Image 1 (cartoon, helix red, strand yellow):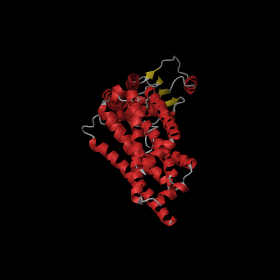
Image 2 (cartoon, helix red, strand yellow):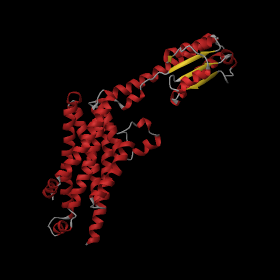
Image 3 (cartoon, helix red, strand yellow):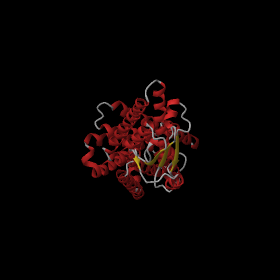
Image 4 (cartoon, helix red, strand yellow):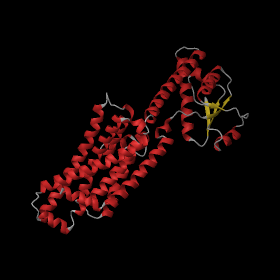
Length: 388
């Protein structure tokens, strides 16, 4: 069966090569695009263009203006007419108009902040929400310090310090994430490469397994001296060698693209992760073959099972934009753990302190593969017994 497996693979080599080249080309294109426009780059710090109209001319309003000038791009467009400013905002010439109403400082002192500030926002609702929250939080903090007995000068200085400290902490976190991700662009390639591997393994092995179910081939196998157990073991071993070859081919392409920046240790860890996840899709191919031998149906089902995982597990889009419920659900899927393992290798390289996390990811992938493999054997054995 081992030799028969590779003879069958050779007979379908054109189909296998086409699948592999198409999906690998897709992986390369997407990875190169992500290098130019990193996914995590969406979370870099951004300042907004705003106009501030100070109708109070007080210490508090001046301190608020000074605070905003340090973090945002304040525009002086030489107009105070609200209608014209609203037009400027709506046509996206400015992001935001802040109006500090008369009596602003008195409202801070009294603690009644209703109507202290007014806003006009542009097309970006995100900018409006962010800036409104910043201004309102600063004003609330100033009012709290005044209520505790501080002077208006000390209260507004304290509000500015709190807001500045919070912003600085947020910026450090964003920079850490961006730097960790961008330091190794191979991260993108090996995430996308797993999609090429999954489709190649699932479709190629599905077709190969189905060829053994042709009536004449199945009849010859049934009268051969090979036991059911030995047939399955040799077929599985042949499939493992095929998976090794596909994983090695992806790593070789990765060497050509990123050889200087990856390093030997990372390459080995990427290869191990690729090979382990390929076993999951080997098992999936075995399970699919037990239900259908039609290539078109296999192709459709394979895409339905694999492509959504790429979105749910953080391969095509970052998990940060997914809801917690979706992320929790994706933990049941193999690509979730594959992506986690790739991120660990990309960020920490040798994994000197993170081997436990890495092998946990591999263990979860293997557990999913064993579940699918057991289901495939159960269905296959049950059908063979019924046929007898």
